[in-house]
Image 1 (cartoon, rainbow, N blue to C red):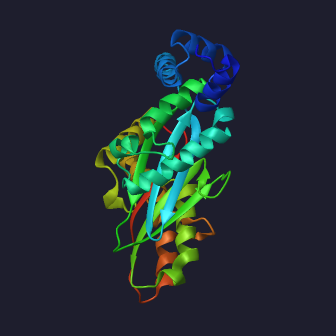
Image 2: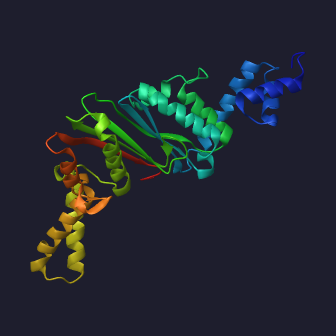
Image 3: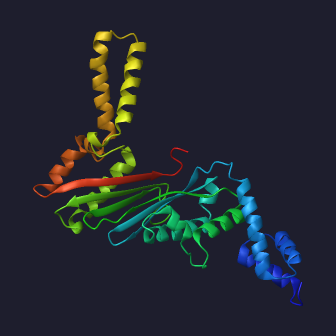
Length: 289
């Protein structure tokens, strides 16, 4: 090492990298006290450490929403444990990446290349965070709502702070009404999506393969129950219509007044004004992993 106090260099390297005392000492010894080369050395070690964790399942984490006027971005970032998801550095990283996602219009490739406050890109910072925390961390998905023709809304469930939680929803509405007049209702519709998890807005928006598969399951289940083949189709149709109603937003029961359908509540609220839900997206941490 150079003439500078070795302990001071180790302390400095630890502050920069967040890596433990022993690893910092080894790095400085290997690189003759050169801080920059030691950082590179540890980064390479971090990459190696990260790659060993890729076989793990990262199904915990956070959903983060960032908004600027009528533009919204939403990301899901995963960790292996909920303990890490509550880590301050993890939360700060997720929050900053969420902001960059808005600038990148939700394009993952551009998000990973985006520069963070420390002048390093998201991908490099992610590797560093994996190395420091010692868990698999992944940026799973992102989406962007920014069409100026629509009014956009968001909702975050189980929030640990504003716009950061375990479940997030973005929702777009095309309407002749002013946003100030529908802020509360727009939020309630986003809450409906969070609570009832629809697959589509209307029947025609459902994936035909999903409907076909559900019908096959229903018919097979009815046949196995010993029902008369003559009435199987009729019962199956009723069950299928129930499935469609429960999984299409407009036909769901309104969470705040279950006797009404969402489409009826919208009609009552909008009156003669145009009011149409154009799009929604729902991210729940770990769903499908």
